[in-house]
Length: 199
Image 1: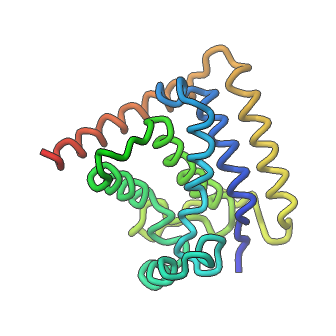
Image 2: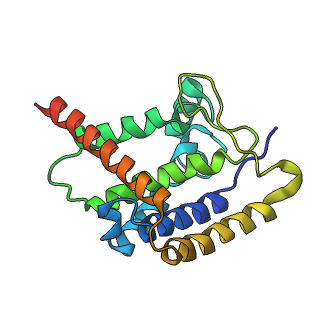
């Protein structure tokens, strides 16, 4: 069995991702967002992709949800794909009552937390089916069983330090600017899709 990232690792990785995304100003909403909205929101959803694993942190506490998902998709199936992110966002926009006032920065923090889990699992040998239902597995296996959880913790802390330092240390990062533009375009396309469904 391959290395499985721990709940602690995912929590640390989600915080590092949230800090980086805000400092790098990946979207205008995150750039001007409230830290107390973004980080707690990222933490809230960073373990959600593992809901399909009955032995995971969430799976043990929500077995009535975890077991049906595990039977339908297995672990690291649909819940670890971009399609799951899109489906959750679409469900949220179309089904959540208008009376639920959730700030835009908190919503983006939730997406960030979910995505951070998928990215973190890409660092393990098992990888993730990013384009599910296509079976291709995307991986960059930095974390391996023989290296243990200490490497996981070190990596997450190093990423956190880098997230704090890197964006502020570079005057104008082309990669960050390109990423920000791509995210804005994707957000516009998603909003068009949602508006079309509502109409």
